[in-house]
Length: 379
Image 1 (cartoon, rainbow, N blue to C red):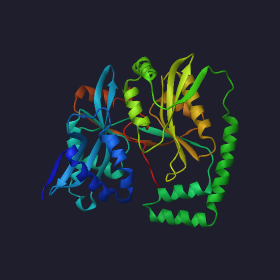
Image 2: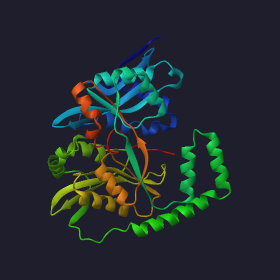
Image 3: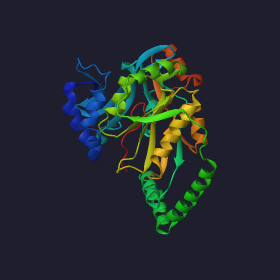
Image 4: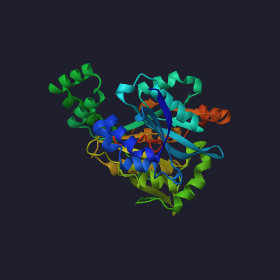
């Protein structure tokens, strides 16, 4: 039978869920039902009066054998606002791989949306993109991840290396051999000693700050005021208004986000969203979204310091990917180290916007709030 690629509708829900159970196995519980409904139905940009979903499916003999979803949001490009689709949950059943299904799914969704992008993808997915280069995909400016080591433990090191070597049996055997003879103990002692030395030279200054940081349950009207006041300082950015932020963080059914607003002289200046790891994840605290005017160094520093203090010594590492140099400088100053880069990819059918989006001078503002870059990562 030939493969049929089409946009899914709400009537395909049960068939998609059955597919997810087979495709993801034990991890399916992290995909359905709550997360799926939140992501593809409750997203405020999904047309609830219509029947179409932001998902493309591949059918063989009327059975779903592959899918590619999209997280919808608004993006500001210069002075213009456009709808954008961010890739998520691309998967094809093992028995159906090698038939070009993933390539056809990407091509269908890229042609359907004016602007389509993906931030984090596997090497296999990148090879697929190389095969559809004729569609005109472009790479973003690479986004580094900054990590601050807080307090390492032998348990953390073991779980970390086991996760990193899950598909590399030779490296896993070497790691297990080293742990058997106490290498993890030596690494932990040395790393924590260096962390203590670092902290002696990275103490925060005691200069007076007139900022107040307060935790909130939901974002209010003042966040729209912050967006209006600061959005022109970003050349390309997903719209961060009350509607988007509450859907993204307050209504997310799977992860528990902590949200903090920074005010100075009673005026809102920025916010930060962080989360502690779930029991099934590595002991890494994540700064998911950090937002303030790029030239407001005081607010950026205060929010980063607040997050570091909030996590305390209960976690091993604090992680924060960010695309803006202004934020990167604050993180470096606060003891974060620059690690691997993520190189996102985008499609844009409009030639004018394609040039703007691809310009290294007009780099996007991207954090883990964009796409579904931050999601449950069980070991």
